[in-house]
Amino acid sequence: MTKLRPVTLSATLLAALALTGCSDPEWVSVYDNCISTMTTQSEEIKASSGDNAMAKSMGNMALSLGMAACETIKTTCEDDPDSKGCRAMVDSYSREQK
Image 1 (tube, helix red, strand yellow):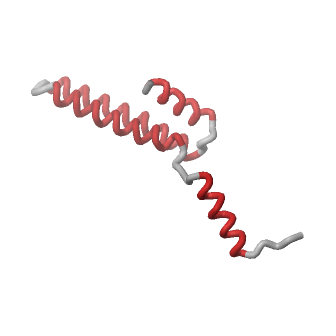
Image 2 (image 1 turned 120 degrees about the horizontal axis):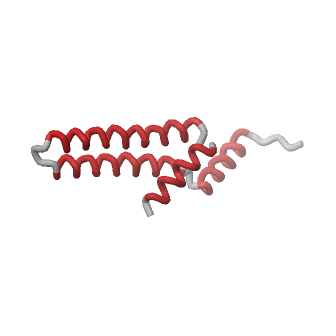
Image 3 (image 1 turned 90 degrees about the horizontal axis):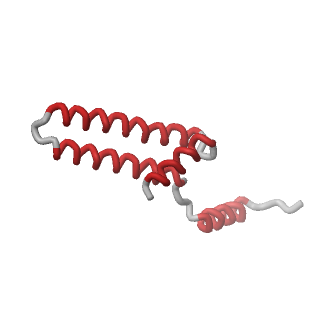
């Protein structure tokens, strides 16, 4: 059996990482897009509501619910990115954005 020297092993690992691109998992971009979308939509609701306190309150509530959904994606996918739950949320969000 051939023993790999640490230098050879390190070079092999670096080459493998370079080939894979070391990109973020798909759920990270879904999470980032979710946060961005929720923030933008909330700001639009608040801006269009003028002095209407009820509309502003509804905008804040929608933002809270949306952010909770985004955080659910993050928490579920951080724990197990290959889980059925993570995959379902990523696929659902991706379909909604098309």
